[in-house]
Figure 1 (cartoon, rainbow, N blue to C red):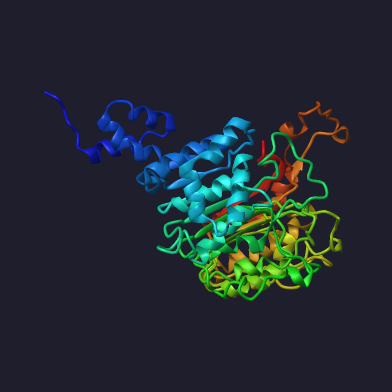
Figure 2 (cartoon, rainbow, N blue to C red):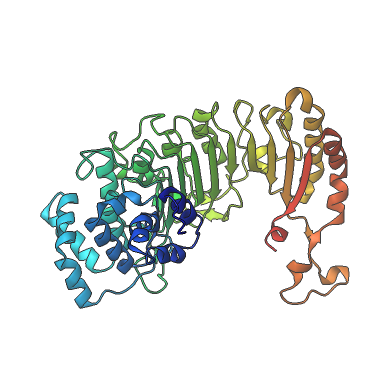
Length: 470
């Protein structure tokens, strides 16, 4: 007797196949399986070059139901691939592609430029052409270059509800957006970026902040406009988001530079719950990490912010575009008024004001919110460990009355003891980090805190950055 399973059950089985190749094999079993599982194959689309994008685009233009099946679009693996003259002629001679270009473009000049860039295999041109067709998209992972005119234009059309988005709201299901900056996106070989812009202006992220369904933004190499930006380049009133306009709740900015605390992005969020920021002075327009600027911008989210990571493993140069870099060790300010904050990850000089003295001007007790559950302190120099242990002991003694939610404490610093000639050991080439361990005297200095944590039912963890990457 032949066992016939309902389509719903077959689809549940198909969804358990993690590899796309296995899902593709299903559609060759029978015509029934082909029609049933083809949308499943298209649920997560990945492009690696213009040929992938071209095949995908023609497929969804011919069968719009496949476009509606796409939930995730991943272009982070895109690599430049040359386009032959024959392929270029086929691209520019495609009737379905030409008709779609007319639907999404505003002028003949725009159509011609778009067609030329498609013929060059430029990622920006192909992605921007595919993007408007994916009405059910939930997650977008996009690699981009500094100059992405087609993507910028199509996103602005989406925000302004202009064709092809005039009939229904654009990307009304899009929940998470990841943007990865790559200057080699349209080049076969490594590109020398010296003297070139290699970052994304925070203003260029705004269209994604203005989509009502988006909740999470992840991006790298984002740079705030500097104070030296010519007035003519400043955003107009129409380009600036209204305060509390965006529905985004999670922002994760990596290897970025917030000259003004990313205020344009942060202040636009009505209910920001998580903000993670990693600073980098590698950008030409970086003015150095300025903690107080982030305190000002995040003040709009004091009642909603639950997770705060500031300058997580950031990089700092002695000099930046603003001159001598002295701001990265300044005090962030008190977190007491951030009444929803549960997790904090911050450098010690930004958590406590210790730039010019060994003891903080404001005790740790007066810097932490009562809602705190996890405290991760980075960049603790050995000379400050005794002070920090004392400050944390005071916090733990008041845990029941002041910090009832506190569960774990992490301390990170340059605590390892690498073998050297000074201690009679000879480090073999390439083996010094592998043989390094946290110094015994670090454990001894932290032992009173460990005892207090154990008695209070708290977790205490010591970390060394060099050892954490082994």
